[in-house]
Image (tube, rainbow, N blue to C red; front, side, top):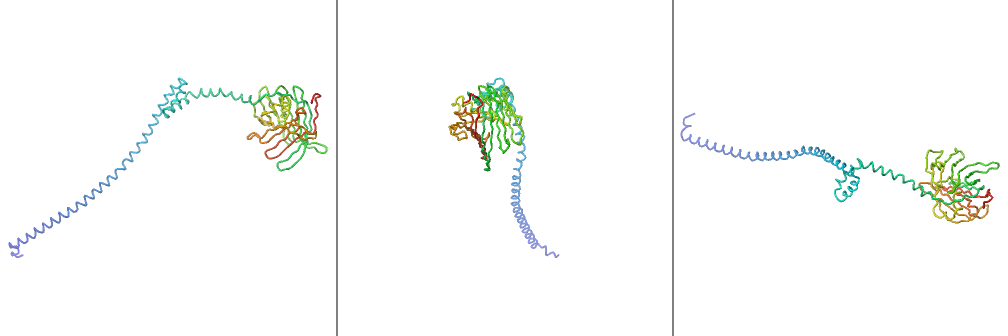
Length: 371
């Protein structure tokens, strides 16, 4: 390259241009670095915010500790048992504790109250409850209302039977009843059946025997035999005060005045003969049947005239209405005061509508003194 190129004038020009270029480069570099610092700062700010958001989850792991804090809670509940040691010292404390429970703290007093009976209170409480248990016997005494009685004289009865089944079917039959009053004992038999041309088919046979005393008729043994079924027996044990049955192992407490199905009409007759005023109000009689004993409650319906083959009879009509949960049938009995208060008609109305009526056609009094 020629020397003229580096002549002083040209050298100054080159240096000036180089300086200007360097200044431009520095300016551009400064501008570039300054501009890049701004977004970098923003990026860092965003990163910081992200870090702050990530920190909240840290409390979550802290949550598990609470469970252990809940477990210790039952431990403080254990201390309450100590108070019971004070309660057993005096039963009166148990009486005062409930009083304080109402006005003051429902939680604290409740704990001792529960713990006390769990330790010692129940034992005396049960013992005291067992003591009143004997109280039940009184109710039977109340139900066993005592009546004056005068059993009717011995007699034999012929009866006509009318039966209407639930479906409307009607049929007729005959019945025979033999009542024997021996003074201090008795025997009773009832046969119900169908009369054929030369024979009779018994559908039901009831028997009863026992004693007669101031309370009236006192059955000892009663039997029942239905066509096609085995005979059953009911035993009245006055001494043991129990009623037992051959058809079941059940035992029922005996009550004074207890009867069987056959003797009920004659016991009512004995009550009416002794004092007609006793028929007012409810008349409760415990009746032993095949497998159980039930209290029959009779009520006086009133005085009625009844047409029979023996003529028109003035009667006293007694009724045992259905008793829900005990018996569903209705039993009606008509007693004739003019004929020793003998039962002259008996009617049973079943829940399904079936109706059976036995009406006397003839009465033969065996006792010469009978009226």
